Amino acid sequence: MTDKLPYSYTLLRYVHDVLTGEFVNVGVVVFAPSGGQVRFKVRRTMGRLKGVFPDLDRAAFMSAMASTRRALQQIAKREQDAGMFSSLVNAGDIARRALPLDSSSLQWSDCGTGVTKDLDATLDRIFERFVARYDTHARDRKTDEDVWRPVRQRLEERDLAQCLQEKSIQGGLDAIFFKHAWKNGKWHVYEPLSFDLVDADGIKSKAREWLGHLSAVVADGRAEDFKPHFIVGAPSDPSLHDAYRTAIAILERAPNGPEVFEEGELDALVTQIEDEVRAHRQSH
Image 1 (cartoon, rainbow, N blue to C red):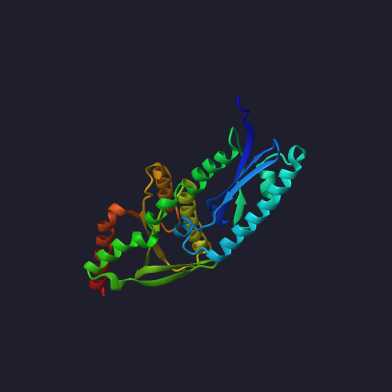
Image 2: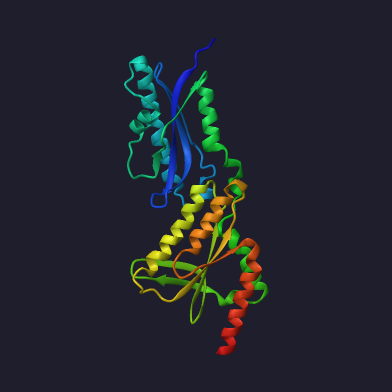
């Protein structure tokens, strides 16, 4: 009978915005105290990251991953030499020595535990489950621009696209830039939001971010009068539907009474714009 080894593991997360907390897993460290066995695997490619965070600085990210990899290699060698005399308790201890906790974009998760007969196979399984599983689907995820494209096409068909312009809404504390807006007494601003993200936390965090933006702009009452309209794209993963509905509810509770249009309601949105533009033209 082969003895099973107790082990612990921790995930390395890339946190794109520490304020919203939206993250993607980018590595795994596994540690079996018996014999001081350390195994790790971290990203060597961008994978789905560029699709999820289009403004990610690739060079800076790859440099940070290389530094983390080198630090883990040194600690793994040290623990192998120490063997049963290792003073470290779990994978979190290993991880924090390689990359201490701070406010940077690379953060460690809480530890998980288990038992295994094959530590290398366990490392591969955890990496596949938490890091690599979405890579093949990243290119298929809708972006904000993908959500807006059919709106623009409908507007062009009705000769309305030229009515929209860029607008920055300035408040005392913050400002929001909108690519699509027009004025009819007050500014009507339109923002496409794709919620075709990788997990529920990311979906809700994106909605909370917009709730925060709008709240900051109107906080002191100095912003121009404006009406927000969100055009939202649903996640492709059916299991994230509840998070998507929660995100919509968060947007609807934002200041200035936003209207939220889903992808099946685009004709209604464009008809509303057409009616308002026609009425505005007739009144002038």
